[in-house]
Image (cartoon, rainbow, N blue to C red; front, top):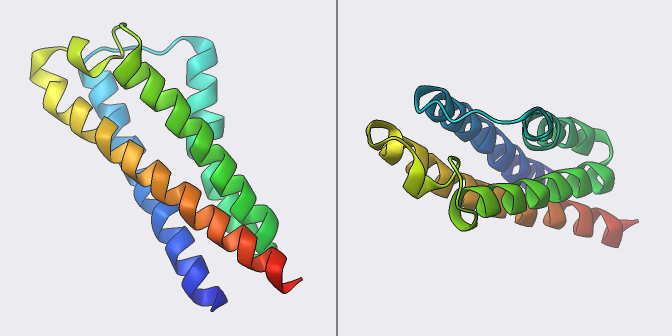
Length: 132
């Protein structure tokens, strides 16, 4: 059973990471910069923390799953607010038309992958807790 949970967690984290690379390319192409604090949050909480949680989940399923779920929840809140709620250059409707499809499409895929990461992380952590 642990292999199945780990497979789901790994799939969610790795697909999410690939989507962040595509979305980052759309940011660069559309010339939508991030401020220093936002860039640090994206790097640490959105890119590094899920990968670290995945690695940790191999040995510590509860802690690793919890880290993935928490980082994906933070990523979901950050992305949803900045891409869909707040009127700014980072809003999907305000991106340069040439990049809008890639930007908006990858923003939607981030919402889906982050939601999957939350579920997979909680599943890993909850089942590990129930078995301890």
